[in-house]
Length: 265
Image 1: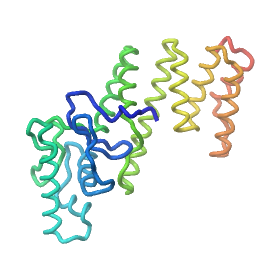
Image 2: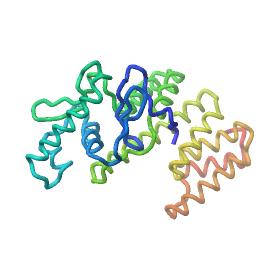
Image 3: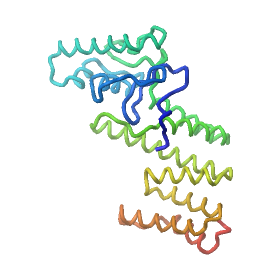
Image 4: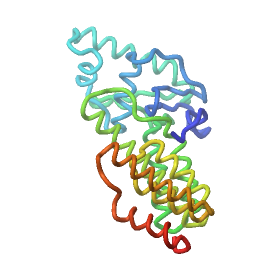
């Protein structure tokens, strides 16, 4: 993954960051809070973070976190969790509570300064896509890099179907961002950075033929034609092994061009 250790920090104005990508964390003023992995805090905050401003109904939370438990005890435990979070986070939020309880639903107080890495990740991607469509390639590249830094790993937590679908959706957005970054770098003639982005994508998903093609073009443009031909063979091998499939016509055509007329690549 592109993300590094610094990916778990956010801009200074974000005093509290809830991290769902990779290992669950709550980062307060740049430092992760000590939390028990898979504990009730993670289950509670993780559920709210995924729902955003929409929130989660109280009864649904009780059933998720204390399935089959005594309703009165579960409600008391939910109140205790809310109080614990308020006691430990409100000072970083200028006295605001990190939890909003309204109309029978619970949500995170994203209006009060609390941030969620998934929300920030997607907002940065949307900005990058708009900038790219406006032809502002340099600014788009910067926004893509900031988004990719937020992606410290696949969505953690639950294993139900809805959670798995969301994990795959976010992973697909991450891979698409790497692909767009590679394309943008190629379009401005920065073939080495384009190659770096394409290879990063292939480390995560070796079957992405678009990334293999970008890598082949970059190798040719940087004078490594033989490596471009090897990249095709690698693509061919991976597809055969994983899916018993052959490369797409576009990949085959590029291979023939690299082999016979590399000056046209």
